[in-house]
Image (cartoon, rainbow, N blue to C red):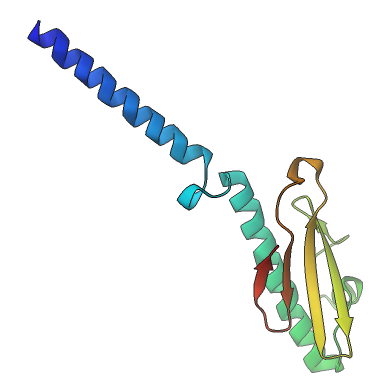
Length: 127
């Protein structure tokens, strides 16, 4: 009888451990987004930082900011059509001294995912 009780206790402990593990794997850190969303948005943030650096280099060499097409022509970015990871990238600039690169989810599966942007301060923001 003692062996059966020990076995039942072990099965219960394993079951509780399994449910805790499963809950951790379906949400991101601190109960946040699912892992795939975290991976993709982190990739988008890295893309935006790379574009921001390309904008800074373009400003230093040309005296103004550039569109994605201009950055591609000068071989400062590798984006072919402004779309990656289910996000559409756009560059808005004004008065030659300010820019904002915005990544907007366009993939229907990413409908509720955040819009991510960066500006000349190189601060990434999620909306």
